[in-house]
Every structure is written in C-alpha cells, then in structure tokens.
Length: 93
Image 1 (cartoon, rainbow, N blue to C red):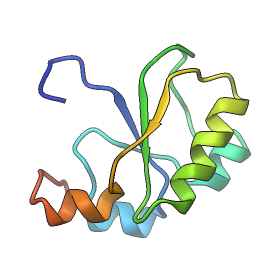
Image 2 (cartoon, rainbow, N blue to C red):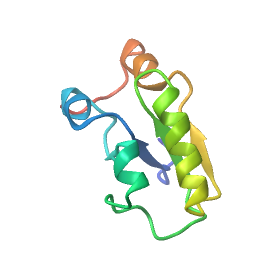
Image 3 (cartoon, rainbow, N blue to C red):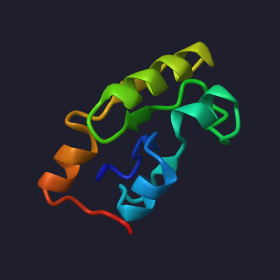
Image 4 (tube, rainbow, N blue to C red):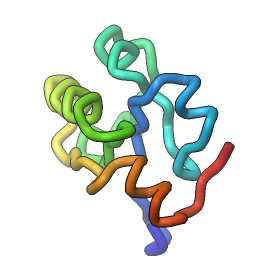
C-alpha cells in the first residue's frame, strides 16, 4: 500500500462492522451486494483487488463471486481485519 499504487481493498463485512473501523480507502461491499450487483466495483477486470472480512469465510465467498464477475487479480488479505487491527495498522472510523 505504501508503493503509491495500492490495490483496491474490498471489505465484505457488514456496514456496521465497516463503520466501526476499516482500512483507509477500502470499499464496503458486503457479499450480498456483490451477488446482486448493488455495489459499484472497479471497471478494470485486471485491477488488483484485495478482499477481506473479519476472519476469512465471507472474504472467500467475495473472492469467488468477484471471480465469477470476471475479476482476474483477486487475493485475500492475510489474517483479515482481525490481524490488521492486532498489528495496529491505520484504520478509519
């Protein structure tokens, strides 16, 4: 993220969880909104996307859905939001 060209961070947690604290610049797109195409996503299907939830299961579902939508460069954030918070990394509330 410090490279100047950070990936697009997709946070698939609920709006309540997102508002309680999220990675700066993250897009809040709960899995159900991705499924129903209710959340605007990057137009570039080759864009680097990093998906996270609190512990991992929802992020995996989000990654699979994004793959079905044609996104080809999707990864999961190691440790997800729980690890980000434990590490004391920047958060927005």
